[in-house]
Length: 233
Ligand code: FPP
Image 1 (tube, rainbow, N blue to C red):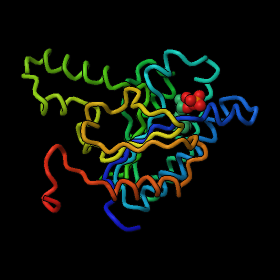
Image 2 (tube, helix red, strand yellow; image 1 turned 180 degrees about the vertical axis):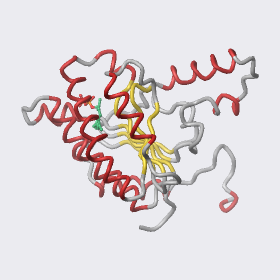
Image 3 (cartoon, rainbow, N blue to C red; image 1 turned 90 degrees about the vertical axis):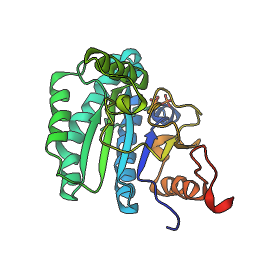
């Protein structure tokens, strides 16, 4: 594929529920299909040379408001991914990272996610970042509170260093599937200059080819970061 490849892509995987409902299936089967789509996308992202792919698997709002049955289904998928699928990722020299507040999760899920991160190969060329019980407002408030507790000055840089993402670059591109055109509390601080790509495709139908279309669109865009593009002046 021609053009520039984003180093870091954020992915809001919306539309699993509607995909299942359209097939008269329970929502949990939509999440199951979503997990399979996520696995295919992460493979293609790695092949294309993306270094970080951050997937929004559970927002703080989802955890607070989804029915227990649906959450149990999602926790089941976490158990499956972090015992079986993650090993394949390691074998390819890739790793995982988890961002968000894991404290309210079932203890075994929390431990699996933490272990998944610890067992990741050092210096991986590709990292799949799971945003779990993640919300940007809580993340920013937590970072500010920790600076304040340490008596440190709050600046853009000091705050960025206390975010969950302190060790990875800002996302170049944020993709949202499922038709809504909003960020829903995802990487708000980090995404100040991200390119945004919205598609009506429901997440289980978001194929590697659809992902490539988003990357192609990104590579055609002119990123000026508030300045003037030198080449086009
Ligand atoms: C939003 O769709 C999606 C989620 C709340 C969960 C996303 C999770 C996955 C894609 C699989 C997760 C993988 C692992 C390893 C757990 P929605 O249910 O809000 O869809 P709707 O808008 O159509 O109702």
